[in-house]
Image 1 (cartoon, rainbow, N blue to C red):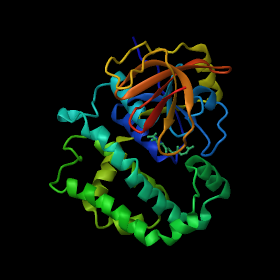
Image 2 (image 1 turned 120 degrees about the vertical axis):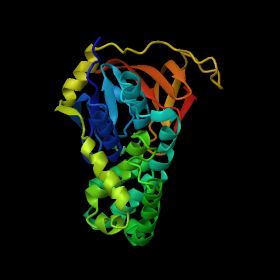
Image 3 (image 1 turned 60 degrees about the horizontal axis):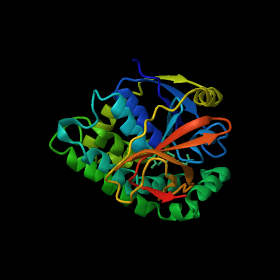
Image 4 (image 1 turned 180 degrees about the vertical axis):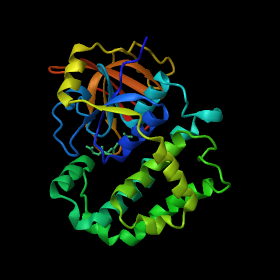
Length: 307
Ligand SMILES: N[C@@H](CCC(=O)N[C@@H](CS)C(=O)NCC(=O)O)C(=O)O
């Protein structure tokens, strides 16, 4: 049976979305692109995610995947060849996300916004303050720019060192490790006119960056958010019930829970467990506009609490 076309809800400047676009390219996939606004509200998306507000999300019919970890897991499950985990590297490429998506990303954000300084629009600052539940202090980031250059350079230097023996990719063959690490360089490249000054000292990383860029984004076709929502409403979730007998907290299908990111954008999504494992939880919910939806989350970095 042919696979349904995945739909990515994203915006072009989003670094986390770039990871998924590169994977579409690597796996040579056709996909639908729903461009969402960079700031809230996103009235056609929230009925599907149940309130999860980070970017990107992936939709397959009435199944919604929140966070790149779970999107990547699902893409690998549906399209195993070529694999993102070559040569027996089954754990490290994904685990590396805890470096690239958190401290490395934070350094990159500080560098980018410190550089943009007064050019950052106030509605964006307001939105990101709400997202983070903390002040988005562009003036402080601007003042810390020299430190942020140092931090960013230290992270890039690890990439350079890993490529030091002339290998084309971080683990030898192309893997999720490359996608994860590339995100930050891609993001800095979009906004930083001065990035070349830093990257000049990293020729291997610069060549690696160009190799990943050449992979492309697969075959992208635009779709409207209204059409994506209508598709969810007329689809039935495809997730089957799977229990986890080893769940350390005795959670089981049918339990009502909330699932919430542990870092920022901490909006709890409510539903009833459909399936769960060490790396995945899927919850069923019903929405007036979207109908019956199953929302999927990763476990690392997400809090599951009885509702
Ligand atoms: N852990 C998340 C992080 C996603 C994330 O922080 N994305 C940024 C945009 S690149 C975001 O959500 N910004 C706020 C927003 O889009 O509302 C993932 O891997 O998907």
